[in-house]
Length: 507
Image (cartoon, rainbow, N blue to C red; front, side):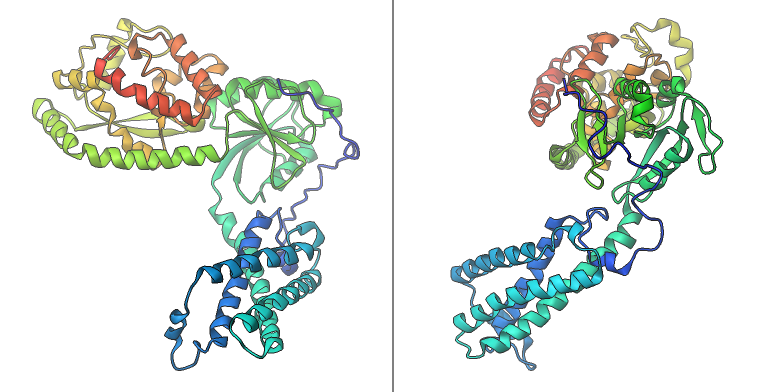
C-alpha cells in the first residue's frame, strides 16, 4: 500500500492554479539559451552537446597544431594518428570540462534567468575549459604558442556552446511541439481553475493534450470552460464509452478531498491514468505514482508500469515481428494458396478490435470461416457457449476445413505480426477483443485490460485458451497487467509454443 501523504505541503497551501506557469505568448529569445526543464531540455542532453562541441574544437586545433590542416588539403585531417593515449587525454578533458560547466551553473536552469546571465556563465566556463585545451595542445603537439591556442579555443568553444544551446532551445520551442503524440484528457473541475489547468497542459513539451471536456459536481458558466461532459457520478460511464488516456484533477483538496479520492478510485478501477497537483492520496498497490518531470508540483498515477523496460519490450516486439514475418513468409504463401483454393473470399480476415486505451485498430488474421461469417453471427447468438459477453461456439458451422486446422495450430494468428510491427499490438499482452464483445461490457473494472497493448499471446493462451471461462480469462489478463515484467513476457513466449503444439482449447 502506498503511504498516505499530507494533503497540503508546507508553503504550498496557497497554490494559485489560476495562473499557468507556461505562458502562451511568444518565447523570450533568452529562453532559447536556457537548458530549461519546462521546455523538455534536460541537463544531460545539454551536457552531451557541450562536450561534443568542446571535443570537436580540441581535435580541430590539435590537427592545426600538428600541421594537418591547411587550405590546400583538408582531407589531410584524417591522417592524425589515433592512440589510446589520445583517448585517455580526451576523457580527462571531458571530466574537467564537465566540472567547469557544472560549476558555472550551466546545467541548472533555475540559475539562468536571462541571456546576459547565460552569456557570462558560458564565457567563464569556456575560458576555464580553454586553459585545459590550450595546454593539452601545446604539450602533446609541442607547439610553442599555448596562449594563442588558448585564446582560439576560448572563442570557438564559447560561440559553439551558445549556438548549440540556441539551436536546441529553438528545436524544443518550435519543432518538438509539432511532433508530440496526442493524448485525450478529461478535466475534473471546471471554472477558472479547470480552465487554467487546461491552458497549462496545452503547452506540455511531451504530449499534445486533446481535452474532451470537463466533469464537475455542477456546471459552471465561466468563460473558457465550455465542454461540460457531466457530473462526478457520470465519470465512470464517460471513461467506459470514450477514449480517455488521462484524467486531470483540478479541484481544491481542502474542500473536495472526498471527491478526489472517489475520482482516483474510479480511475484505478477503469485503468485510466490520473494526474493531480501536489497533494497525494492513498492508492492501491497496483498504482505507480510519479512526479511529472516537467512540473514537480503535479503527481501522475500510472495504472501500469511505464519505464525503460517498455522501450526494451518494444525493441523485442519489432525484432521478433520482423524475424517471424521473414521466417514465416514461405508458410504464408502456402496458407494463402490453401485458403484461396478451398473457399470463396479473401485470404486475410480484417476486423476492428479494441487496443491500448480503447482505441480501435484493424487486426489481420488468415480467414478461417466462410465469406459471410460476420453477417451470419446474429443468427447464431443463441448458440453461444461462452459465459460473459464474448461469443464462442466450440463447433462453429462457419469454420472451413482449412480454417479448423489453422485455428488448432494458431497459424491463423500469425499475420498479427504485422500489427505488432505497426505498434498496434505486442508479442505478449491481453488478446484484443472485437467491438461486439466490448460493447457488452457492463462493469467498469473490465476496462482495465485496455491499459496495455493487446498481444499475440498471453496467459490465457498458455492456460487452455477457449477452455478457460470469461471470468478466468479476465482475471489472467489483470494478473498479467498488475505483475508485468520482461521475465514474465519471456516465460509466456517460451510456454506458447508447447501450448500451440498440443492444441489445447483451440476452437
